[in-house]
Structure formats: C-alpha cells, structure tokens
Image (tube, rainbow, N blue to C red; front, side, top):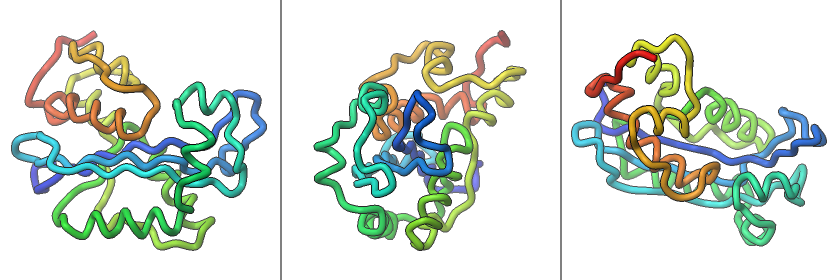
Length: 188
C-alpha cells in the first residue's frame, strides 16, 4: 500500500430495510462520503460528499432513516446517480496515484451494481483495498471487526454519526496507522 500518493477512503450508504422488502440487488446508493488522505502523513487533504436520489425505492424506509440519519428531504433534493457520479469524477480529477479503500468489499460492489443499473461508467480508475481485511492481517487478528469495534480496539472515538458516509470515511482515517501496520495492538 506504500506505492500510492493518496488513500481514497469511501463509505457509501444505501437504501435498506429490516423487513427484507428491499432485496440486496435492489439497494441503491443514497450517500457517497469520500476523503482523500495523504499517504505519507495520513491526514485528510480533501473531502467529497453528496446525497443521491434513489429511483427503485424512492421512499426511504423508517429503518434506513433511523440507521443512517439520512432523511427523505435529503434524498428528494439530491441529484440522481448519473449527475452525482459526474460531480464525483470532477472532484477526483485533481488527484492521481490513489487507491480506493473501504471497510469491506460492500462499497465496491454497490458502486459496480449502481453503475451497471444506471449505465454509467465505473468512476474509479484505481484498484481497491478492503482495509477491514488488511487491518485484521496487520494486527494479527483471526477475525474481522466492524469499523466501530475497530475504533474501540485502537482507543479512538467514533465521531459524527455512525452509518453516515462522510462521518464513517473520516473515522476510517483514524484506523489507517493500524491498517498499515505502523501501529500495533496486542492480539485479542
């Protein structure tokens, strides 16, 4: 991971339901939260955030709003996926030699799914690193931990609202020294 100038940490939020009324392959991105992190200093150099108006299930479930704090008004007044991706691409044009990082593989898969559905080109030219997996490997853990549990393990507070894309992306930055193995915890 040391060959990059930036780590692009992305966290997505998507339509969801706890009653299984929205199938996994029907979920849609409703927020992109992204932070560009300097690979040498591990500091945030820039951020991108947008809500996205869903089309398959345009009305958010109460579960989704409770989980994410994203309101119906947030998405009703948001751009559609193609326009949001256009803005995201414009933001990315300022950066080169980055690697897309996310806590798990979900974010990459959801991006691919929504791009295919909306017939929009995948916006990330770089590869992808599952930093949840790398965190466990770097720390010698046998199991993989959720982001909030990983923050507790390293003694860092979860700031903002959990399950808000931009807040979770910012929180992942705190875990990067442990992902990279620069800081070590004792095995659990």
